[in-house]
Image (cartoon, rainbow, N blue to C red):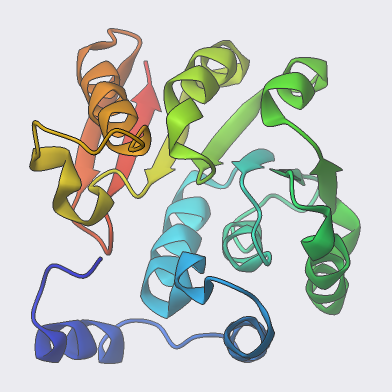
Length: 214
């Protein structure tokens, strides 16, 4: 997942903003108690998400894929005082874990959890969004984009995580059961060619794409 030398990675983290204390606790508890802790955005990417959100100052944020709530709390740092963050996840076992940390933060009452299939939930959301973070099942990335693009305000931003997929996007042959790699290759192509957005792919962690709606 990491493409730069460990020493450089450590230097980058050391010279970026510190991880807030609550997120340090969430980070530790995720690694102690939750399966697949590598799914956590983590200190550096979390500060990137926070910075982007603070620059945009979104009123409404949508997150597809909550996991333990780390990235949601990072993006909430830039949310307008009257804003809301809507986060969707299909794993009901993590719902209470997420809620605990949301309520410990300053943003708890403005973070709305949705449990279920994002493709069913998103059409029922009435607001338009200023910031969207896609970090769920890779097979449906293109479907998420197509369902959210008309719910994104002009100038709004879609952030897409894991778009380098540990370098697998460079491959041309895939294992029979690998649906994620070809789906991400197609998704990256979609973001590059769709005329409704402008896109830059950043080699941050496992790849983070910033797409801005024109």
